[in-house]
Image 1 (cartoon, rainbow over the protein chains, first blue to last red):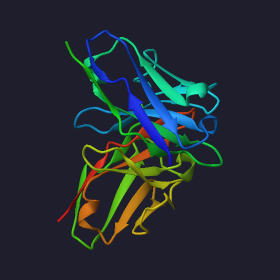
Image 2 (image 1 turned 135 degrees about the horizontal axis):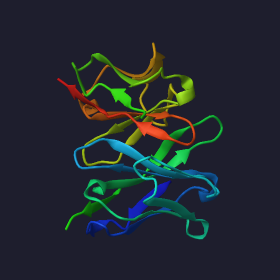
Image 3 (image 1 turned 120 degrees about the vertical axis):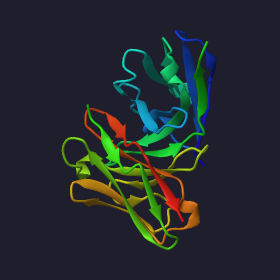
Length: 121
Length: 110
């Protein structure tokens, strides 16, 4: 069974930094791209960042460029997102997703339950 | 800037049929955008319904179907049930590794 478990969320002051983690199990981690998707309170879903299975290629939404860094650790089957210079508008539930991006596919296949990031003083 | 458009809300009677669409503010949606659809109940993680325009994800009932209608992607629910009442989101691949969610459609079944 595929499992994605996010952690690292919490209350952070504006201007601060946070690193979110997503521990995975149930599949061959190296074979799959991964992504982060966020959802501000009462708002829709927003794709934030993606990383290839090998970790060589990363992609970012315009809203994330410059402040977000996605990475992965093969030895821990874990994907991360580092968020710097946090702003109130970064307040959201952050979901980790296993992404299918090969063989003519392009979609989010599995989802974690999310971790809440609140940016406030 | 790319904007993916969806109806903000829709209402359908139990047993009825509803089609939610997913368009672009500039241009047409095609299979090259790999349209996918996700269902979300408030407070829960999204659930994958449809990918690659019209392929149902594992375990998704066949009353959910995807297609291209005109210049938009479409999600059709046939025989709507009470527990279909939730939010629906589409995603389009825009090239260069960029994916964009639509704003979401809130479906009411009454």
